[in-house]
Amino acid sequence: MSLRFSVVPFVLFLAVCLPLNKVLGEGGTSRNSATPVNILLITSGCCHDYDFQTKAMQLAMDEHGVDAVWTVVNEGGNGTKAQIEFYKNPKWAEGFDVVIHNECFANTSDADYIRGITAPHHAGTNAVVIHCAMHTYRAAEIDDWRKFLGVTSRRHEHQSNYKVDVTKKDHPIMKGFPDGHITAKDELYVIEKVWPETTVLATSKSEKTEKDHAVFWINKFGKARVFGTTYGHSNGTFEDEVFLKALTRGTLWAAGKLPVAKSAE
Image: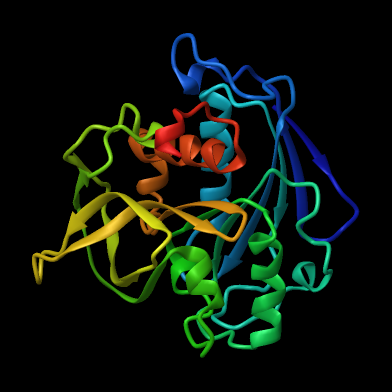
């Protein structure tokens, strides 16, 4: 693993160069496998250990044999409201196969700023959305971000070890995911709405209401493919090999680097 630091503050470039067949399974190959997956990770904000989570994602993809080049943007501090400079460039998303959103800014509500983020995705920039990305821009009156996510959530329940029920066992992202897997201690997000273009891949049941809530899903947002999970609060989750494998496969799927049957897309 090699590290290269750019001259731009708070932006880290990480190159990982290994074959994809380990994460894809025996005999698996990636479309454009000779080309690394170009990943942009946006991370920071309230309430989580983002440095740990970033390292865990990078190491997991390395261990699963993913050929990846990372650009990590950590701006905005650790509060609940920020407008990061990186997004203010209208071409911020150009050149990336997939953008991972792992930021947490619930009280940022400026509509023009938010649409400057969602517009490149609607035009075709693929994405992964993790945990508090679901509550980011929660204060906004517009629904653009929530349509992009594929779910609407404004609150979470207590931390616990939740059982994951796989609802789409044939989807390539969930390959090898053990049905009934018990999570590390994490928060269950209350899903108020599943948007029409969203396909739920797995759910967990509320210990308070016994209602099932989506915890892994895919979404079509304009021309973009989006993979999402509400799990990812605790460092324990980012040490869970089952979670990390699903996150890795979901990232490759969103980037168009995971071979899929046509019916599963």
